[in-house]
Image (cartoon, rainbow, N blue to C red):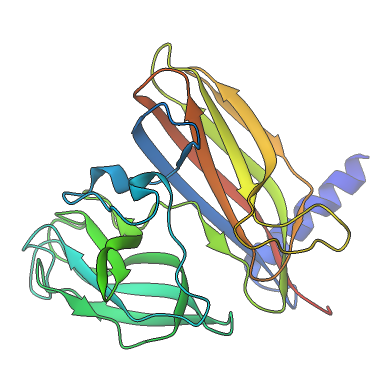
Length: 269
């Protein structure tokens, strides 16, 4: 057993080094404060802290999905200091999947509180946004959001003030790939604020798994109260399915942080 464990650890290290063809680590993290009591739960992200709380669909409690055909998007900060010559975030990278489900990247030059459109018009899913260049503050001065060009209430992701990367634990599996979920960790930081933290994906558990668009089945559940728990997983998530974390609380103002990772493998390898 020890040799098997060591071999598995060596495999993970080799994958992280990028020396296993067609395999790499896929990970995501996020957090949410001031969780309220809602029947449908609340997706883990800081959308409830935006100056203009998003109102589309489930407001800030449910992160909407762009159209499958893709969309053009717009970025803006809540601070004038997040600009090309400012002390906050100056430029950032947008990692996304296009209409075909392939991975793409675009660099955006921020213009403070003025709107900046993406060049891409076929963004199907925002995987991550992060700073590329920064000023003396080294992190965002204000909350930065990315939303549908024609609807500023439909927010897809954000960078919180004081950070330099999106903490939105939702990712879509790229076309012609399968995600093998390995581990996730969740914690709750408030005293006497019991919360159920649930990892979900819109696919079933058959072999091979079948995508069920927008039907988020539970993959793992944690009951937390001023505690942190790690769970190992063994789920395969098919191409174009989304993995995300959501939280349900019985007492208002719970605080949750999550992190998950797995191995993304190219189909046929």
